[in-house]
Amino acid sequence: MAASNVSVENVRRLLNDSLTNLGFEVYPLKIGWYNSVLPPTLHLSYPDDTLAVVVLSTPAMFEDAFLPFLEQRCYQGLNDPIDQCVRQCITSAVSQCFPGEKVDVRYDYELLPSRKPKFLAQTAAHVSGAAFYYQKADVTEQPWAEKKMFGVCVHPRFGGWFAIRALLVFGDVTVGSELVQPVPPDCVPSREGRIKLLEAFNFHWQDWSYRNIISPIQTYSQKQRDYFSTPPAQRVALLRAWGYLPSDNNQPEPTSDTQSQEIGHG
Picture 1 (cartoon, rainbow, N blue to C red):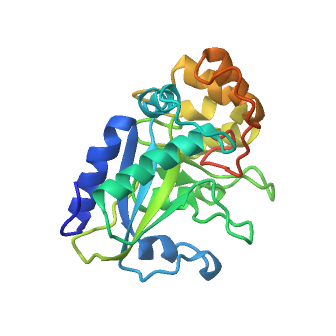
Picture 2: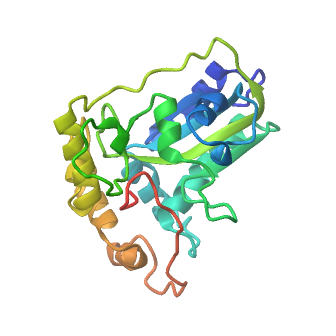
């Protein structure tokens, strides 16, 4: 499935062919769209017309990619199991679809030496049209005064039941007017709805109510909810209890620097 003529449509098609059945979605964007809404200190060092793709995981990823990843005994320990699964899926897709191409893959959990994230996941999702990034500034007559309020993305079909996993930058591929920037669907248009969303995300994120700010077409399965409700340091033990990891695996518990699109990382 190598891409002989790299173009937006080829990239989209090849990645969809490789990743959709595993529970992922892909959305192309130009680096200039991303950089235009951020201060220079957070810019990605590529020309504005450089092609990039943001990769999301949907509720189906847990059963379609993660559990098979564990059943095939692919987990190597040390890193977070979900992060390792996502990396394997994306690395495999990129190597099969784009051999010889310069693809800079940045994962949501990766940090620069400065401790800044390698890319701002929610910004990338917003400018690509994948999901609307609701922030404090999107609320008129804010009721929180100077209180810090974290923003959150809402997917038009899954609500909050998804995660932003990676950004793929095709360093040698430039795109022109054929790629038009889409407007992300404004799923929560009212002031009251946005206040409810941001307060649920910031103050009650552990009950996951913010994920249902719209009626999603699919949510996480009970097994997936149990997994992400478990503290990260205890998740390997849970997977052992479920039988997905050998009980005599004495590898250390995984660590992850990730802070995905939601505080709870899932």
